[in-house]
Image 1 (cartoon, one colour):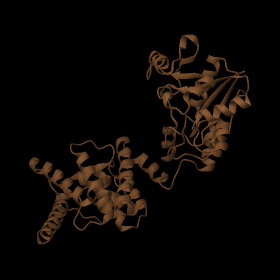
Image 2 (tube, rainbow, N blue to C red):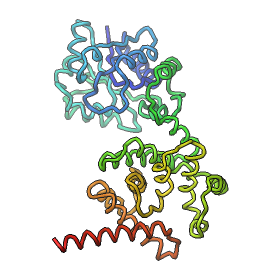
Image 3 (cartoon, helix red, strand yellow):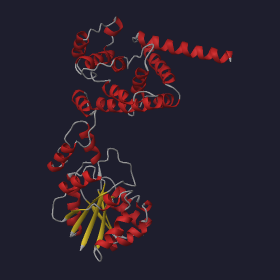
Image 4 (spheres, rainbow, N blue to C red):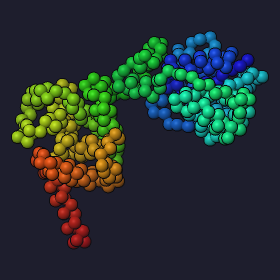
Length: 399
């Protein structure tokens, strides 16, 4: 028999996986395709990796045709899932059969770094899936010849140019984590299992779902990045990581709301705008966000509410959480303004205060020459930081 070996994390398996395996089966005339979920992938660290038993069951529900066999050989073996070990076990189970190892073009180009890759080549024929839009078959053939010593024209490696469905398990997990259903890339049986087992969600999924509906895509991704940065800063400076993540996630909840809606919820929340604030609508979303958390979401933690309210301007006597959200907004992953790397270095390598002072110098220095309004909270925070620095200098002089 001609047996295909289709391994992967399958976290989760989707219809693109199934379609790809079906295309290979037909193109290579395979009698059977073994679908083998890895226990721990050696080539990458998976975030939100579902349990082995869950991925096995999802594979059984995804690969339902008679010629598919879902194997638990790597899940049972545990530890890192090396292809060499798997093929050794399969050679015992299928003596005399031809084995075709199905991999993607991206995996082929690093194949020479695989554990015991020469022995793998002696046990199986590589069947490589390529798309001309990513890595041309000609480039793969050159790599196979020059690095692995395999000639496609002699059948020592099979290069298939296919058009698999454009979807990925990473994108599906992201959709599920944000309250989506994974539709249309999950078959109904897999989607039902994920829902039944509550896979790929966490305590913040409802809040991500809320933001996904309220914010534009760019602002939504920014909010996710700020939450990640806030959690990192809290870990670094001894803050509450969960509070930091929550405040970072919700800091821009009112950013894309209409001005009238921002004013309405601020009035409802008893927020009275100063003259500077009335004439600077760019600041409204922070105050409106604080009111929204209190009135619409029932948040009672004043530290979280204040962290949202002052994340744009800062203020004197800020709490640790307030400083974390203020700085996280400046250094989130997608930020690319001039000197952002300096800000990241100060925030992660020196102190929140050093990063805050630099940010205020940057902000005030860009607003003043344009004759734009500067909030008094920012000025007071700047002065507070300067005074603290002066005190530190005087202490050093006395020492």
